[in-house]
Amino acid sequence: MGVGRPEPVFTTNLGELYQADCMDVLPTIESESIDTVFADPPFNLNKQYGDNSHDDHPEERYIAWCESWLSECIRALKPGGSLFLYNLPKWNIRFGAFLMDRGLDFRHWIAIEHKSCLPIQGRLYPAHYSLLYYSKGKPSRFQKIRTPIETCRHCAGEIKDYGGHRGAMNPKGVNLKDVWTDIPPVRHAKFKPSSRTENALSTKVLERVIEMSTYPGDLVLDPFGGSGTTYGVCEARRRRWIGIEIEEPSDIIARLNGEVEPHQNDDYVETEYAEDLALTMTG
Image 1 (cartoon, rainbow, N blue to C red):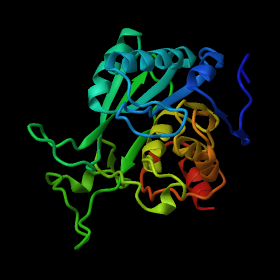
Image 2: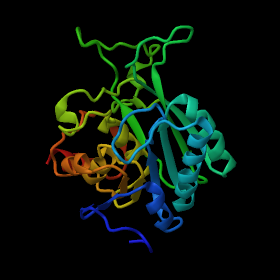
Image 3: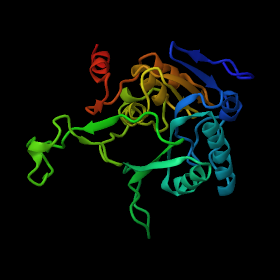
């Protein structure tokens, strides 16, 4: 535990969860100790998350707050470590420039398709969230992920034409793209804690982030716990983790106690421990 850090409210063999403001915990984390940061902060949309959160700030105050915790995450990140930031494109444009100004290397703007709102008059239909992917210098970890070749759900035939080169393709699938159209919405009760009314991220997003950027035993930091998706995936994939959530953490603890199911994920990870991982996930 870092100097001055509050006591965790829940621990496992791999991780520790703090119920606190992230800015009360992040400064206590040792510099250059984190392999991957994943952050899914409030989007400043005036949503009601609980008694301790406020999600309706003037624009510049919201930007300044995000830059303060991002600065701490950058400090804590190891050289070669990765940082992922999930937010609206409106905000991630600003934050991407901030991360580059702070010396991080741009890797990808990942568009995650999400069609959950009504069309907005005078604008294109908003259909994706942004996942920024930056690294602190050359990444020390990058696992190639392959996704299954898409098939028609009616006839089971392959959807895409591969220009006559289908036979030359890798049998494990196609390289993961920076546009993710296969992320299922978290609507069914079995995929999120029963008491949770707010949105939750699919485990499939975090499985890709964590497999792409870490090895088993590496340390992952998520300063906005939400429903605990990051921590649950870390447990399943044998990564150490530090979690922070300002609100009451019962949803997270329910997930860590095995009360929430992951989404199906047929990705193939090209890594030396892939077979061992498959055995772990099925056994």
